[in-house]
Every structure is written in structure tokens, then in C-alpha cells.
Amino acid sequence: MTAIHGNHRTGQVIWQSGVIVLVAIAVGLLVNQVRSGRLALVADWSPKAQLATDSGINLEIPLEDAQALAFPRMALFLDARSPELYTEGHIQGALNLPWDEFEKHFPQVMDGVPEDTTIVTYCDGETCSLSKDLAFALLQKGYFNVRVLVNGWTLWQQSGLPMTAGAEP
Image (cartoon, rainbow, N blue to C red; front, side, top):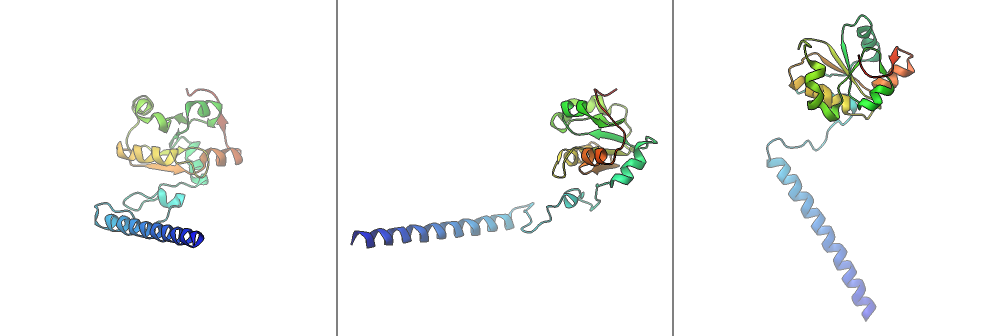
């Protein structure tokens, strides 16, 4: 009789746990629907979709376009990685504006840079969000011609494009 009573109790616990989970999901969905700024239940989380502004403009720039802007110095390249990684190597002519210390370095790095300057941000790795975060912060500061070179440092190296190491000029 004890084994039957134990199995009944285990089944009851599992059933009650399932009900609690379903109620929690229902409450969560309901709260999401009534709150302002609700979250999309289905969304595109690809890097390309994450680089779209509210107006639908995609900030991603292909490597070929970035390269075309780099050597006649038609754009300012900003490395969003840490100063240590920047010093190890970076795109030739790029300045370091580390996302992790954005507010600290912004005034010095961007001093005198006109708001209409074409800016290309980059970091390393396809899932690296530092360059995206930096680009959106620059847009909020009034720079309206900002682009993101996704996986920029790796692509630049693999293409054999000009690089340099050391502290910025």
C-alpha cells in the first residue's frame, strides 16, 4: 500500500508542477500583451536584423565597401574592442573607442569629428555586439552616417588588408 501511495503522490506533484508552469506562461504572455513596448513573440535575431534602425535602415557595410572608404580616408574607422586588443592589432588608421568605456573615451576620440562624417565601427567575431552597440550610441550622439563592419577585424585580416599594431596616433 505504501508504494501505491508514493506513486500517487509523485504523479500529483508532477501534475501540479505542470499546471504551475502553464499558468506562469499564460500570465507572462498576458502581461507582455498589455504592457507598453511589448516584446515580439517571434523576431529575427540575426546579426543583420539587429543592425536595423527604427526607421528600417540597415547599418551593416560589406567588406568591399568598407575597404573602398578606408584608403582614400573617406571614413573614420572605430575599433570597439578593448585598448589591449586594439594595441595588439587593428585596421590601419582606425581609432580605438572601446564600447566598454564609451562615455570615458568619447569626448577625446570624437573631439572635432563632424556629425556628418562617415563612421565604420568594427569588433571581432560574427556574434560580437560591441560594434553594433557603439554604432547605436553614436547615432544617439547625433552622428547619422554610421555603419557596422560585422566580424570586421577577422574579415580584414583574412583579406590581407593593411593593419597595424600599437597605440593609436
